[in-house]
Image 1 (tube, rainbow, N blue to C red):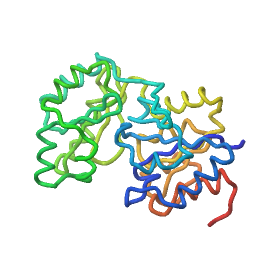
Image 2: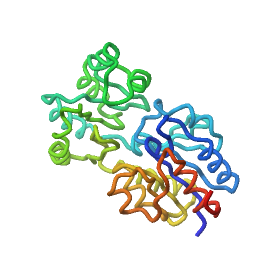
Image 3: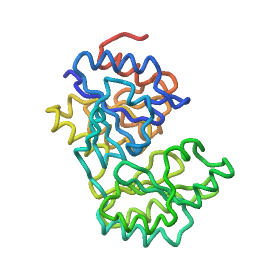
Image 4: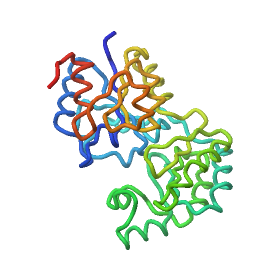
Length: 280
């Protein structure tokens, strides 16, 4: 069955190691779009943290952001689907996390907020387990992240729990404990975080909503990713693809393993599986 929708994770998948979308990936998207294929970004990032590349590529119209908590038509900047945490979930998460020493972020209406003290520390020291410039350019500091979350308890798209290098050993235990929070889903998009979403929030659920909107079946979808937060989306698609740098558990469920994100894996998969082209 012909593929009519391609859902693309960003970090570690569509973006290469220089954090840009390569020319080969862009060209493959353009050619697929010319054939009527819908190119959809599906990312854990909030809308405000999407890279400029996404908005430069005319073939991309829709973005599933905050792990599927929001869907936006980026051509007219209209958000038409929301799946936020419930107030009950937010209050339970705050009670659980407040005594613990982790750096928290939360996404509200497509904007990312972070603890102000931590933001200033990164600004002063230029040290962070992630790109310093990414943090400073995409996160908005608030003085009390817990109070902020409670003030916006009906609007939170996601809560990110971040682990410094010396805290990474605590992540497996924290995952099991966070799973006990009511009305939530727990996933991870990179080694240093756990992400708390709403009870039915996922890239897979957002992809189902896109299918309804566009009249496209599961069998007509291809999804490409690299991390655990992509797995439900890959399983929801008829053609699940992992890039070569994907986690082993992601590769295990893929029907095709493309080259790495830095070797134009997205372009390769679109060329082979959508456009029917031979090896480049």
